[in-house]
Length: 115
Image (cartoon, rainbow, N blue to C red; front, side, top):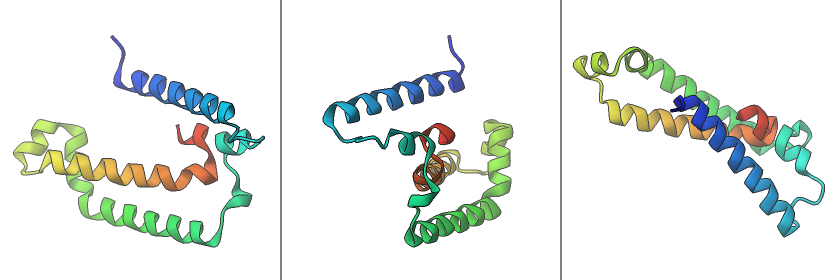
């Protein structure tokens, strides 16, 4: 039986490898595989910078307002539930925030660093 982190790493590596194989077979890479894997700061536009700033501001506000419930959730789900934290809602909100951060940072830092 694997730990959760191990299974996530295996899934991420496998899906990244599968995506690269599919893109190379379809002719969509055309030599830009390194920019997909390692990112490229030179391709970041002004709009990307503004979107990254907006997502960063959203993440900081989220952590400011929900820092204590997140801490309780990480410490113990039972303790968070007893304290009145809506565990399911907070987990979904945290997953959405994490997905937004990952999606925004993929172009800049690359898929390998995000993984």
